[in-house]
Length: 74
Image (cartoon, one colour):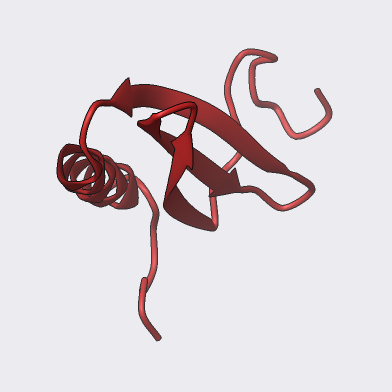
């Protein structure tokens, strides 16, 4: 790579968001990470109740935000 980063090293993320959706009778949690040139969406897990999915989504989002530099909310 021309910027001196090893090929396996991801670029810096700008934002992260989690989404909770109903799918086939269960609740799924997805995470979306925004980079300079792309957005990456990945499935985290499925949960039997919406409450558990929302709790997991919040924990995952908070953990991921720790690694993002700069102000998160303005």
